[in-house]
Image 1 (tube, rainbow, N blue to C red):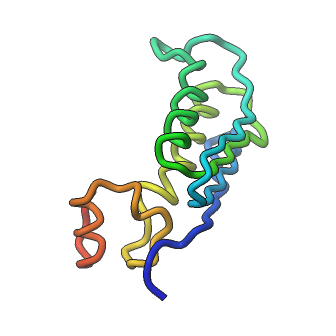
Image 2: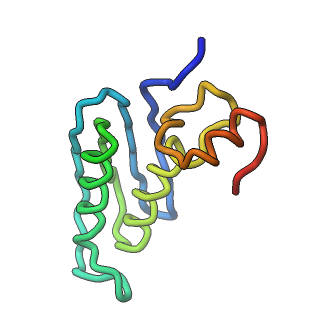
Length: 120
């Protein structure tokens, strides 16, 4: 089997926060985002931008993306677990050609993965 694995999901624990991220490379863009932030900002970062970023990514990549925070109280940990959950299956796939969502990587990174090289 060659190509892109269509489905991928991951659970990410970040201290007290736990987030589930599921991705379907379907060509049908859609976002389900279930996360509540108790503050408007984490440092200088506007927490409203977390959902906006995932919305833009799902629509432009043409994927179905579910991001759901299952537990957590610290807004920094909640936001970080959302992004690390996305990063797992999408940005740092396994080093095989069957890696989930390999097409969302930069062309240079895809080339390196196919040749078994690290891209950091």
